[in-house]
Length: 411
Picture 1 (spheres, rainbow, N blue to C red):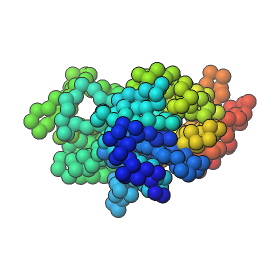
Picture 2 (cartoon, rainbow, N blue to C red):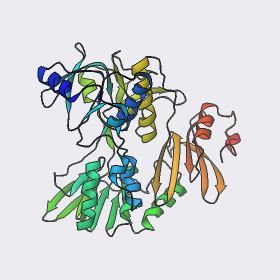
Picture 3 (cartoon, one colour):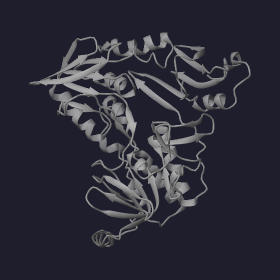
Picture 4 (cartoon, rainbow, N blue to C red):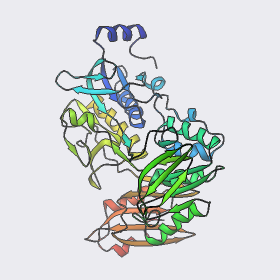
């Protein structure tokens, strides 16, 4: 598809300060890509602008900690989404938006641009959390394509890797790095990897997936500081001991990027931007999607989900809603992880402090139901159980009166 603006028109508009898009998207991730495609399903000609702070065009993030390490033939370029070519959107990389002028419907950027919009989508994603660590080329968070490039190069030149955090990134990176010619030391606050979300015996199995592959796991510890001493990085733990390595990776989760929305006076909720069922914010001309959007889930109630499925589906709905004004987000997203050949998927809340009901399907396959105080299922874990996400959604949407009747519902 040809871009709606020619290069000459765009240059002239930028120079005159009159540049404007019918649809402007802040953020150039997976939600931005599917939003542009959703717009094009309804509006074939409206101009679309996408402003991304990264230097790369939109791409799929999950392969950064999975397939790009597991498949020797996989290349980063394989996972770029081709948004501009598919939709005619103008994708502007390396562009940081610094403010939103709601009254005049325009945004400002760090390089002094003023860009107008008819409708605006906030798809700003999340920012990796850091702690008291110096800025150093061998200390990195892990979320972007550039982070992947850096880490891939470091595995060629360094041998001792220390990872902080036992969430998705920490566990998945420990798994893929264990297959490289490096040593891996994973430091986690939990006693056992995954014990905040899995039943105790599954948490033990989960951790064994790493330790059996040679990963050293230190549970029950938090890092308090990191220091650089020559070519070595020393991490100080809360028990007074130190761990050393050549490379330090901070897998400490991420926080939604809500600064723009907050400064613009948009309503917030659940640590994100509050949206209605059409993904519209408290401003009728602004939508939000992906990691930052707190939305009314049709099954789970108001929630916010940071994962691929939500980004893709919510982006599509946001784009359609912007173009038509009538699309509602009726999808309950799932999330998943893959660690050394073991895949688990889930819908809803995984909290090991809740009562659980387990259904053993044999061959190591298991369904775990998480029950609230009224013994109503609020989450479903599918351990090595595939093609059952829709069944899990059905259970949460219409659970039986007696939880014992959950046995046999899935698998």
